[in-house]
Image 1 (cartoon, rainbow, N blue to C red):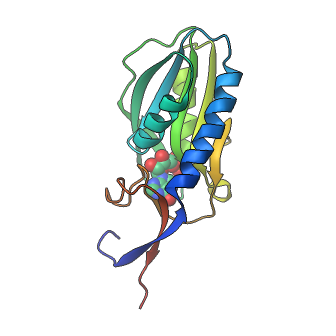
Image 2 (image 1 turned 45 degrees about the vertical axis):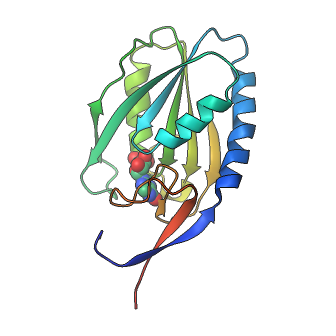
Image 3 (image 1 turned 90 degrees about the vertical axis):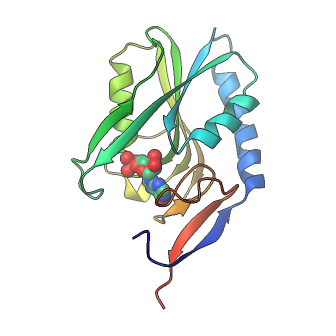
Length: 180
Ligand code: IMP
């Protein structure tokens, strides 16, 4: 698929992303008012730019940690297996934890990570996703905060890749394959 010719069509501008993150950060800071130190957990690799921008807008003390997953099997199968490639460095027991995901598609990745982190007995576990594709959902999971809802399209940019390309685009674009 990576060899097929494609174009990237702009979908969400860098300016719109920045404005949305400002709003979300305000809501999040309010939701966590009085929280001692929030642990913000980024899902690698797709969330690396989102988490960097988000924590810089959060006017409260935070710790940052990362977890990396990889999924195997046919993405259209509901039994898709998710594996942890890199685990958290820190202990989250009794802590307020905010998981940061780039895009919730089938939801298997987020569901798996939430199950795992919940078993470590955090005080409260919540999630934010920059993008949500609800029409593709297979697992019963919804992020507490969502940046933008997108249709069933393959998107790229702002940390999100297509065959490891396009992560450095400052905007979100839709990958369109050249069918000519
Ligand atoms: P899920 O487990 O199906 O929800 O997939 C989540 C992961 O798949 C995301 O964190 C992304 O890394 C990847 N993903 C899902 N949709 C897209 C897309 O449109 N473009 C690039 N990556 C995607």
